[in-house]
Picture (cartoon, rainbow, N blue to C red):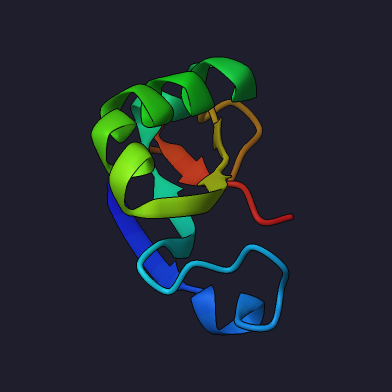
Amino acid sequence: EKINIEDKSFLHKRHLGYQKDKFHLKIQIESKELNNLSRIESNKKIYKLLDEEMKKYIHSLQILIKLYIFLSSKGSTNPENRIVPLKL
């Protein structure tokens, strides 16, 4: 489980309605819990957690969730039956 947060505000400085006190963020998340939810449900969960921050500090949020797949030992190269990241 991990999260990477990137400030992309500098890309929007010349846009109409730009507010210097609000951020444009890109978050990349590796989460087995979120991976078990639909994209809509996982985004709802994230927005609910960030509700207050969205109102005060964040103008836009780009959410990327790393997908995982389950590999079984039967006919696979993963004999431990574990979840591994899916590389797209």
